[in-house]
Image (cartoon, rainbow, N blue to C red; front, side, top):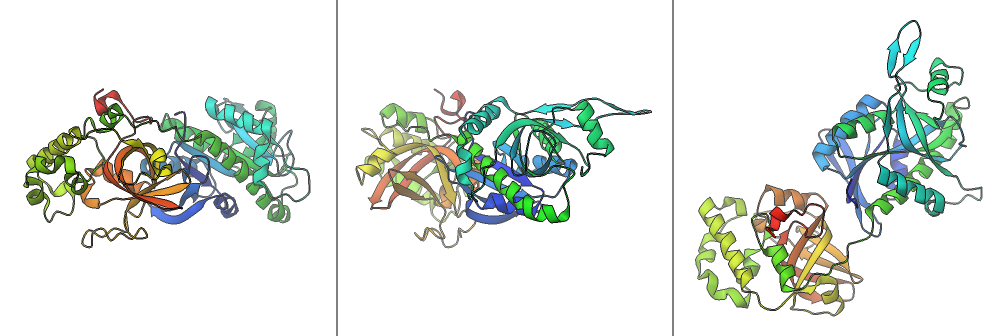
Length: 446
């Protein structure tokens, strides 16, 4: 698992569980992918976290399928199942259980009697450590609406998962759990599918968080109506706190030297975005292109329309143009705080991406941030906005970067305007992150 997470897919079985989570999510929008409806949005942590929430119904098999689907669609850093469960030991109504491991209690051999063959899937170590810290500190309870009663507690412990709804301590399944999995804290129906699905998509980590809505024997329709919403809200609050801890804080941006510029721009073969219009308008490179670029790019609607010789030559000219840059660039946050309008700026970190689907290549860029594709970064108390001209997205990989809703990337831009609440910049080049987890020496050749 990476040191910090940028995105998570959160699955629930019930609508009330989904609603409890969405109460914490901002910038919500619904998308349908492969028939599944996801509520996309952002958790406002120290470092914004992109989430996709889906209500998928009950069952381990269904959950495993949706983990596979989520991995293919979103490539998340973490998959989570959040909801309610029945308490088995050491918990009360409303308490929260984080699964330290998940037992598949149906694993065994059906002989004259059922012979268990214990199967346990363990929680990722880093997630477990952060869960312990949150449990010990108790800060997650600040996300709850206080009702004057004693706040719920959170525990880290084993959960048993199978295909049966366990509603009686006299049932054969309950007796099996108590006999063969006697440290089980709660019982539910999806955790095993989540962990198995994540395991098959290794190294994707999985997390199960459950609020206790019943203690098995006291489960009925009337009590579910009153207790399940409370248990779901408590589980959602703990989950959000844990996800924010795992997201961490933004990496300090310490770029700005000539070597930093070279780290971003040393090779443009893997760049997501090369703004040719911006590059050829830079005073230091006006003679370099010698009119060729204007003829080559006239009328194109995307970089992909260029044939290979033109594409190759254009990249090489862009690299040569950047080589001519003199001086250094300022770190984005420092430039914005000092209102250094007209300066070249660099950044390396998580950015939000918006409006790719709304862009119309026939219309082009309008300057309207409600319509046009753009990225933004919050820096120095201001929101720094950068319009993205779809013509200069260099590849399918680049297109995917701008469709995700948020991604780590590095870039060089021109700071054009600053006011009290926002700033406007025009990007020259956007590339894979320098400090992020996707950086390899092969990307930049250093």
